[in-house]
Image (tube, rainbow, N blue to C red; front, side):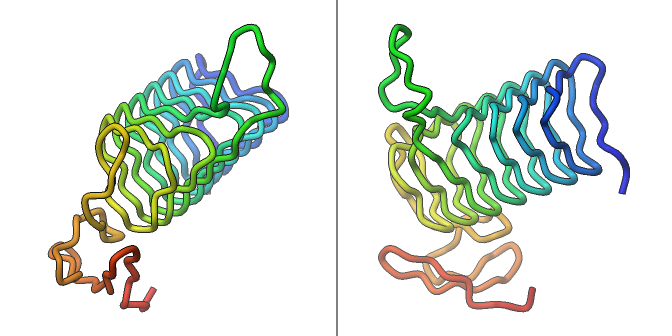
Length: 190
C-alpha cells in the first residue's frame, strides 16, 4: 500500500500517526497524538484534535471538526461541515479540558452535512444521521435520525438504503429483523 499523501498546505503535527494510503488535503490540521487509519480521505479545511482516533477507510469531507474525546471507527462517512463537540457547558473563561465527554462513532456510520453531534453520545453501527441534524442522545445501530433534536424516523441497511417495513433492502437484498428498538442484519456471509 502506498505512503500517505499530505498536501503541502496541510499540517500534521509531530506525534500524529497517519496510515498508509491516506490522503490529507488543503489546509487540514491533524493534531499531535491523533491517529488516522489506512485508506482515509481528509478533505479541505478539516481539523482533527489531539488524541482523536480515526479508523480505516474513513471519509471526512471539507470543513469538518473532530475534537478531542471523539473516536471514529472504520468506514465512517463524515459529511461536509459536520461537527463534534466535547464539552457540554463550555465557557470561554472556565477551563474544562478535564471534562471532555467521550463520543464513539461506530463502524459504517454516516453523519450528514452540517450535522452536529453533541458530546457524550454513541452512534451505533451503520446509523445514518441526516443533514443538519443535532444529535443529543445515543443513536442505535442502523437507526435513521433527522431533525433538531434528532429523532429516529426509520432504519438503514449497511449499504445506506432506508429499509422498508419488511426489513428487506431494495438496493442490495440484505434482510433485517426489525423490532421496536432494534434492527439486526440476518445475512452473515461477510
